[in-house]
Image (cartoon, rainbow, N blue to C red; front, side):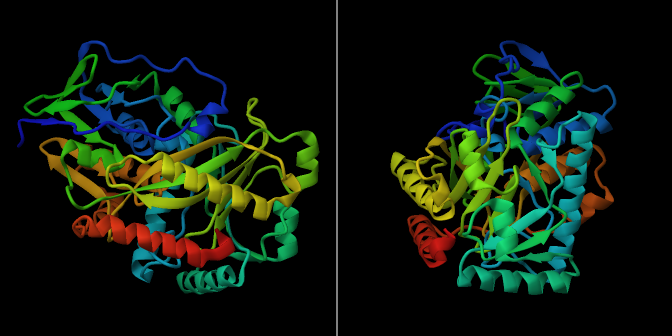
Length: 448
């Protein structure tokens, strides 16, 4: 066992977490300013950390649980994603989202268990439909290349025995208001969430059982019979720790040379006026995932507690092994998103983007999680491979079950994986990965 680690870097998130900004302000949680004790500490207040804390609360009786969040809840990656909880294969490292049939069937079982856990959380804490909406998922194409991707995906779903419905261009126009989409493929098992509202309401629901501390990043850890986690203002001593920090597990010194740090980017419009909503048409809440994995994700969200009716455009990805992005990255993404918005919504010419941001993903070359007991009584629930809402929830649940139960049927399924594969050396890794992503974006054409 190591005696001590110093955390190499703290999270840096570019731009505002728009989903959080459009919600009413909240009082939040205190910053840790004392030296305290707990039975359990969860580091990270995103989907993995919240799932770990909730599952622990179900398993450990009256033992005390502390969650340490480096920033404010829902200001990090959990409040920056597009808000899809996807049950079906969505392999970001592939050209079609699909993996092998056995792996995909196993992943579907695990994803649905995570979605069910999130559904129970939503029901327990009285979340409204605009926060947790089991509306299914639409994958759509606007070009011949995108249609070829849909046909390929259909074949894979047929082989898996999964239900779907094809939607015509007219159906897509009625639903989105946009003439852009030529075809859609609807599958019923996914959920659409307002990610920041889900995180905030889940934490509030747990707060009588779990102690949350915001703006309390862990800067070092001392290992022993009781581990000590040190923050700028205080510390926590605990026998058991779950690290739910996704790619920042490398900042703690674990999984070196095995994790890819990818940023994706998004823009959100200002609130649409009643006249603009009328010109747009379509339904009030919808989301479209691109048939081409390098294409553009689009969401329209209706007013929720004063948020306004808005559209989100998400595309572009960069590999940044420093876990930071440059102004150049943000500027390029903004230009691509403005073009994508104009291609899809010419009737909304003149609608400005109010928020632009980037969000951290963590991938591995073989799409495996960074999971398990990494020091005595310290567990990692990290590397969500770009699907933090579902796979983060799953890894948090599984870390809690591994730490408390040692085994479960679901955990046995989840542990049927390899370790993340070692990466090629720099500078070849970053040069090659970014060149490949630029090439795939170019090949995506107007699907981007």
